[in-house]
Each structure stands twice: as structure tokens, then as C-alpha cells.
Length: 255
Image 1 (cartoon, rainbow, N blue to C red):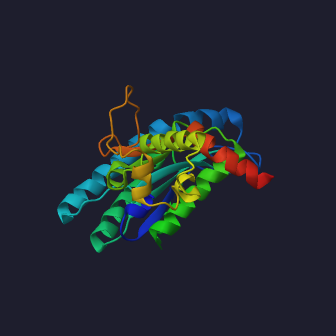
Image 2: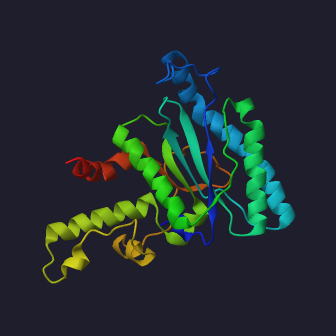
């Protein structure tokens, strides 16, 4: 829903781990003595790389007079065990395309300094629906493999969650409200009214209604460092939160 709130095409960018010279492997998986410390330090190194590239992108955006921001980011573990990062960048206009190209070029230039590897610079145009489907598939595959990912698995720009009102807080409120109504067995309402809403296909009105209308972002008690504190991430989902939602679904598919 949040990704679909962006009007226009976008591109998927992937930043991978370094090659065999840095992370030796046996043809199936990287050796733990090199892989474990690399994965553990990846979030910190990624934050520095992202901020350095973001600085250049913002200078270009200011020169062109366009608003630009990274739409969403997801961690995924490669088959060899090394983490890599997927990002969605805006491509709706020619100016946004130029800024995104500057950002990706900076990632490519600086990746080696921060101990990352190949950066996909194709910038292939994708619709919001298709891009969101790619990210959802990455998340589902990670949960099915029960892999250990660092910190927040998914980060969505606050600019998007401000448009949709779809945050972890409103989703939790919606879940509590649905459970309360299910326990109460409100016979006066139709089955459609008491059914659990689908946030992947639902509308903003449904999320706000079931979520008791609270869409404002409150300050958390403990501030968590994210990839882009200057820009702000409106939705950051941990692996535990994702498993809690997807585990019943994945279990049903296996059955």
C-alpha cells in the first residue's frame, strides 16, 4: 500500500556483498569465519554508504529543484549467506531519473570503500504494483527460510506513510480491533464487515477505519538508528514482526 502511494514508475536497485576474494566460499556457502563478521557489520557500513550517496543525490535534486527520496529498502540474504540490499528509487519524471542515476552512480563508486560489491545500475522502469510485488516476494522468501536478518528488515520512507497512514501502529490497532469484534460476534453486522481486512489489497479508508482513525506518528520511547535518519523511515519492520504476520500464511501453503 505504501509503495503504491507513489505516483509513477520506479526502479529496483540491488547492492551486493563483495566477491570471493573478500568472502571465500566452498561453492555453496561462504565460510563462517569471513561471513559472520561481514554480515554483522553490514548495517552500519550500509548506513554510511547510503548517507554518502544520498548527499550527492540531494545536491543534484536541489540543483534541479525536485523532491527526491529513496522509497523503500529491504535486506535479503543471498544463497551464499551474504546479505545484500534492495532499494526502490523514484523514476516518475526526467529530473527524478537524473537524481536516481546520480545516487546509484555514487553507490557504485563508493561501494568498495564500505566493503560492498556489485551495484545494479540498470534502473529498469517498474510500476508501483510490480515493485511492491518484488519486495513482498523477497520478504516472504526470507521468512520461509527462517534466516537471521539484522535490525529492521523493511524500511519505507516517511513521506509515503504520511500519505497512506499505514504504519505499524495503525496495523496493530486494526488487528486489536478485528480481534475485539471477532470475540464479540457482532451478529448485527454482515460477514464482510467483520472479516479481517487485507492490507495488501485494501484501501486507505479501510486501514484508517479499522485502525480507529489514528494515523499520526508518535515518538517511540527508544530511538532506533536507521539507514536514513535525516529523511526518516515511516515504516520499519523487524523480522519478528514479519514472522508473526506471515507464519500462519506460510504454514498453510506448506500444508
